Image 1 (cartoon, rainbow, N blue to C red):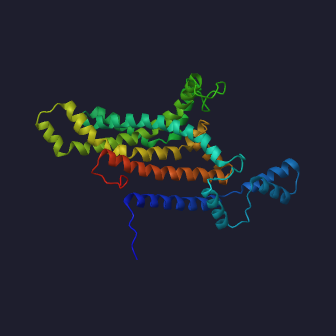
Image 2 (cartoon, rainbow, N blue to C red):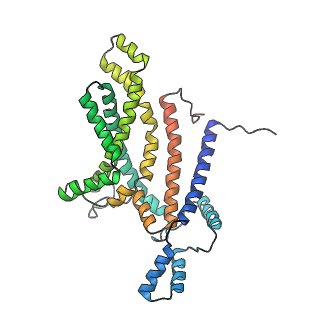
Length: 337
């Protein structure tokens, strides 16, 4: 029997699909093991509001949410997979609209916020990191940069967001507190709407930036110090090359590879980990609806968002491998085959 040989690219694709399937199964089971029964909550509301018997109210709640807890979990999972194969993520139990609609409406806002935040944190981080390595003999500068990185790593993004909200939003009133744009503007590709969207994104973007810039500083500094210890740097200095040329052509070009490789993963992590900041600023992105789904025990919406986060992370890993191969052809990720 002839043995099937898979290319490296096909292996990565198969591994990604198996990862998505396993993550979907695990999250599906764990979501249904969460404490609290949203049907009981809804039934209790109907009892109080309409004076219905509890059993009748529970049946009405089950019909409203299109969820029957008596169906075995394995059957629910296969029904869910069947819907996924048809491109159906289900209907939100509380919002009563397709989960895909919620995700497609929320995803652009999270992408917009993530692109701004990642661009700021990455550019600041690699700049300060490489300068900290280059001027490592200037203790005051290194201490300043290290202090900023420690501050960034130690304080979570939601706490930074709260501080920004209180001081820049409430006290100084420089930026709006909630939402993605001013409701008085007409949504569309027009200047007032774009300026309003940018203004509303500043505070949550700053929270993300300040919380993540420390990681980029440390990563770039470590990579730059490693490059500075290489023989070709010493040879370039011995030849009397200008410091600017050594910095740009030899140091920066080689030290930036590890952070760039991690860029795609950081982007995916930011999309899936934006729950606290988006919820705090009522920013209608993926993180906001993820928090909404948890608070309201909306199983289908929560499952759909987790699926999107898993797919994003798997694709980010493949993109990171492709970027690494493009920057340095000596790295064989298998994606070019």
